[in-house]
Image 1 (cartoon, each protein chain N blue to C red):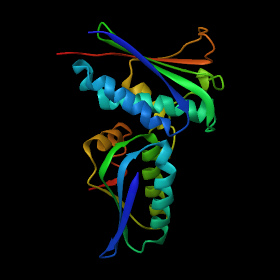
Image 2 (image 1 turned 90 degrees about the vertical axis):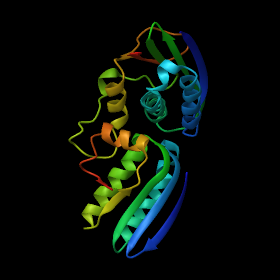
Image 3 (image 1 turned 180 degrees about the horizontal axis):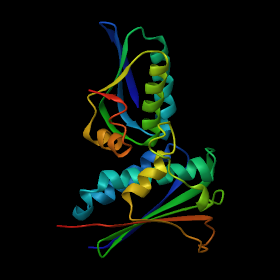
Image 4 (image 1 turned 135 degrees about the vertical axis):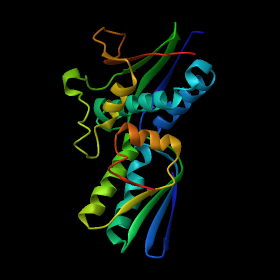
Length: 100
Length: 140
């Protein structure tokens, strides 16, 4: 998994790339959670280039969402691939996570 | 169409990608399974992940786990074998989806996708755990 972070118009965006599983889930979390804590505005997680995500990746999305809510912030999932959206829907999280 | 293939994988998290690629190779060569492959790969990977997390408590080991994928008479059977800590079936429970929290989704996905989830009690060579997942594949 690789990633890239940008900051524009008070939105911090992390672009994830690759397959998110237990092997790289901690790495993804280690990048996303500090961003959630330090960002002054919205945090976007762009999943356009994530071809696969399992329960480990979903856990990171849930944790980031809950942390953001705790801090009065918002995490938005952007450009989710079909395969990842299917997994989010299997977990019935499409109504809970912010998806655009 | 019928087949049976198996492979052994090291007990470490970096093996999960190899597990998925092994599955992809098989499912992409079999038209009847191609439509279901995303969900099947997810479920198999989740089961393999559970072996590493629970049977081996997240510790790498020189042991191997075995994954066997068989397809006979439109029924897919996935067998996973490992030599880790014995799994007590009563302790394997999917999370309540209304209790939104990280963790516990792997077992939920497995039970949602597969028709049968069996923790086999039969002794099989030196294997300690033997998980059997079955699914009837509807072809058109």
